[in-house]
Image (cartoon, rainbow, N blue to C red; front, side, top):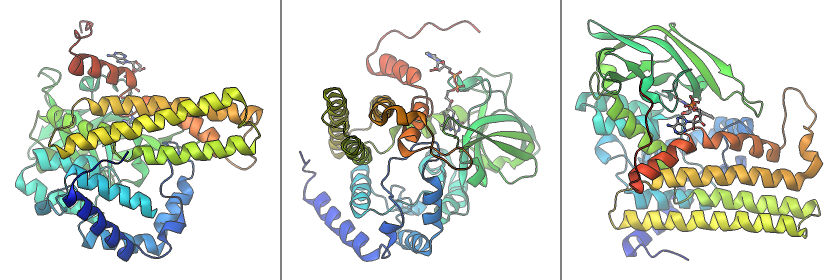
Length: 407
Ligand SMILES: Cc1cc2nc3c(=O)[nH]c(=O)nc-3n(C[C@H](O)[C@H](O)[C@H](O)COP(=O)(O)OP(=O)(O)OC[C@H]3O[C@@H](n4cnc5c(N)ncnc54)[C@H](O)[C@@H]3O)c2cc1C
């Protein structure tokens, strides 16, 4: 099924396809499989990192930047292209079709930028947004703490206002991409006397400050893609507080809305590729005729198709001007549960070989071992699936709120 998005979108698709064809550097698509399912955990990340160091990637970055396509969804006044959600999806689809990447350096493009656009002052927008587009500022997310993940509003990191600065002290945990970042967006408690959600501020800090230290946390896959971070009196000007002191919760909710929404209309494409790769593995291992395996693969295919139709439905809604609602939670729940199950199916196809790691230094894993192990994280990050179920129950279905334990 193809969705008819009208002649204007069809024309945009033709134009952007031509543009990609004319501007993507020759050989860029061959550097790596840019369309691979990305699992947090690092498999293939060295190959991806090497491809990103290739001169063709820098050239592509330059082309996208000149065409205002690094952050295409941002309004033109902030350096974006002002593309609506439908056109951004079409752009992503066409990049996918051409096998070339979208340039994403950190969490600035998708999370910090939109939050600064919604809640920042004109001066903050003028200062912070161009630095995200140019790649000068690469952000990581400092929300979770050792005792605070789902209950984010219970965070303990202190932010003390000292003159025209805020001084931040505390510990953050599970910070993805911290080692690549030079900035962090931090939630800290600037008013301990205020009600839990009210005393929080959203501050952009210099992550290269000597009062910041961090160390990697090793994951189930053997990779160490995230870190624990220690902020020991890090100073940031009050100018770096987005949304004003004590308003951090509202800003954080904007950020999380973008984090959970993802690119619902194109994500099935990567899962579809992965599905066919697994089917090929089943053939090579001689189990493709096994009725049990066939049933599992058939199930996986139906899930990928459901993701495709859900994506089309989301796109159709956007084309009609409807704002995304609880779809973000439904989408996050669906893909993460699917991927965990797919990892298990991959393990049953690999059979007893799945139990043995390939030889080599460090902690090497095969692609399917990695998919199995890394997929377990999908139902934890961006808000656990239990939390997503609560959101769907309470905000979409209108069920009674879960009972709260008194503090
Ligand atoms: C791969 C990965 C990358 C991450 N990257 C980042 C990052 O870059 N920056 C960042 O700030 N954080 C990051 N996180 C942290 C992530 O946001 C938290 O792990 C997550 O919010 C859960 O918090 P927690 O680990 O403290 O678990 P807890 O909140 O302690 O939850 C423990 C269990 O209790 C359940 N639970 C908790 N509350 C409820 C409730 N009200 N109802 C029902 N069940 C409940 C949870 O679902 C979970 O199963 C990352 C995590 C992972 C796994």
